[in-house]
Length: 321
Image (cartoon, rainbow, N blue to C red; front, top):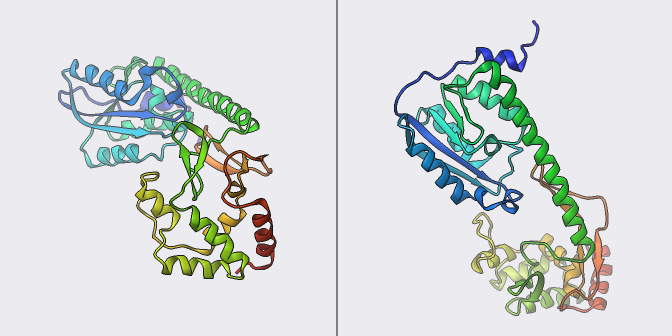
C-alpha cells in the first residue's frame, strides 16, 4: 500500500467538534538554551501570556498548567509533558494551549505526530497562540503545509543554537574557565566567582585522610569501610545537607569508586582538567569525548601536594582493590 503523505494525513485527521467548556491545559516549556533569550520566553511570562489568552476565550476552561523547566524541545520524554498526555488519556484534558509551536517541541517528526495524529485521535483541540494555529478552525489545505514547515524551522533552530553554545563552551574550556555546577568533594563554589572553587574546610581533613591511609597501605575498600564506620557522610548526602544538590535517591555509604575518584582527580592538587565531556544541547545528552580535554595548573588552592597524588596514583596502578 502506498504511504500517505503528511499533507494527506492532515486532510483526513479528525477535527475536534466545536463545544463550550474545553478542559484546557496550558503547556509551558523552557530549556536552558531558551534562558539565554529574551525575557518574554521565561516560564512566568509564558504563563501570564497564556492565562490572558484563555481568559478571553469563552470556550476554554483552564483545568491544569504543566511546566517543564530546563528540558530540551528536541525530545518528548519530559516529566510534565508525560503527565499531560496521561491526563489526556484519562479524559481530564481535551484542549492544549501553548505559546507557539516551538514550546510543544523542536523535533520536526514528533511534533508533527502529536499535532496531526495523537491529539486528533484523542479529540484534543490544539492551539499555538502566536503561530495563529487552532486545530478547531485550521484549514488542512493551508496549515497542512505551514505547520510542518514551522516545525522544521524550529528543529533547524535547535541544531543551530546547539552549535553556537557548543562553540562558546569550547572557547571557555580553552581559557580554563571552570563551568561545573558543583565542585568536587572537598571544595565548594566561590560565592563571588562561579568559575572558581574554594577549599571546603569542613571536609578538607577527610580528603587528606583518604590520601594518607591509601599511601600507608590501606586499600580503597578498607578506607571506605573506615569512613562508614566513623559515620562520615558520603559526598552526595553531605551535598544534600548543604543544599548543593536536592535529589534524595542516594544512600549514605562510601564506596571504593568514590575513593578512587578522589585519588585520581587533579583538582586536589590545585590543578583542573576540563572539557573531557560536553553537553549536546540539541539532544540534551551528556556524552564522553575521546580526548584529554584541557589541563591547567595552579588554578586554585590545593589540598594535597602534587608529589602525594603522584605516589598515590602509582600505588593505585598496582592496588586496585
